[in-house]
Amino acid sequence: MQFQFDQHPHRRFNPLTGEWILVSPHRTKRPWLGQQEKVTDSRPQYDPKCYLCPGNERAGGIKNPVYTHTFAFRNDFAALLPEMPESPSESPLGNLPANLFKVEPVQGECRVICFSPRHDLTLPELSIKEIQTVIALWKSQLEELSQKYRWVQIFENKGSVMGCSNPHPHGQIWASSFIPLLVSREDECQFVYYKQHGNLLLLDYAQAELQDGKRVVCANKDWIVVVPFWATWPFEYLLLPLFPVKRLSQLTLEQQSSLASIMKEALTRYDNLFETSFPYSMGWHGAPFNGKENDHWQLHAHYYPALLRSATVKKFMVGYEMLAEPQRDLTAEQAADRLRRLSSIHYKSKS
Image (cartoon, rainbow, N blue to C red; front, top):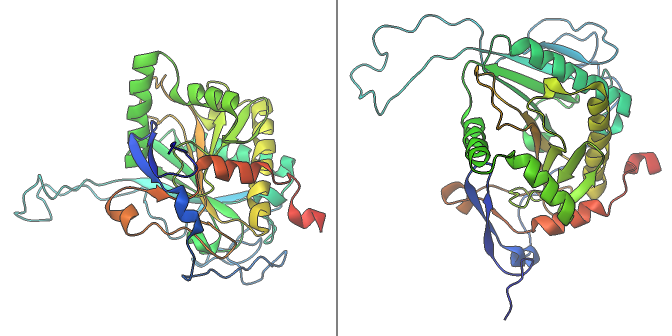
């Protein structure tokens, strides 16, 4: 019997984090009698009860301006605070051993980014020009917050399946005085690769994927979207530049335009897969603001969607995934092939 990637269980290595994932493609045939999600795609252009719509009062009591494009504001229920009391001279944990019970104070800011005044339009349903406006806001927020904080995390949770608490299309930005764990792993792995090979890990990877083509979903002259070889989530994306760049704030207007174009195409394919507003969590990773040159860093975005078999059946990270290591059934190549075959015209536009 000859080993086949699309038939036999195997592990794949993620050079960006130094972690492994178990792939079990033969399990796609198993029946599903578990939980199914509700599909709620229909929304009005304006919802008078929505905390994020123009002119409405938010949960914290502040009234939104009647904004006409993108809109950013400080999160009314922020996870990080810019002002913190001084750390006490004595540990608040008493006599507990300090090597086992470590605590450090943190500072930060959390902001909400409304992509559009329209309550019913997600990113793939916006025009390329409107997506460019979102990218420009991401860029300006990054430039501002990086003056004070070591890390600025731009992200979006789309859909109630991903825990989004408000259906109005929006993202968030959390800036912190510390560099988070997952970013530190990527920093270390990229640094080791750069020292060993003299090249950028993700630029080498992007070129290799472009040449191979099996996991490429779409590409243009500046950007490529792939289901990464080591993908954990069924239809995971890795969005990569085809040129060296450390941070989102360093993109030219032309590069922002081509980014908007490939975002629209890639996210449209998501929606077209199950003809639903495809839920995901996404986020940008770039060089931290740690006072170093960070020549080993390459900008990239992760998209982690939960849906597995249909608009109502999602992938659960439980059991083996929580106790051992991540596992997936569909191979990256199979997922990319399905997405690549889809139309780049949104299914709602066709109807």
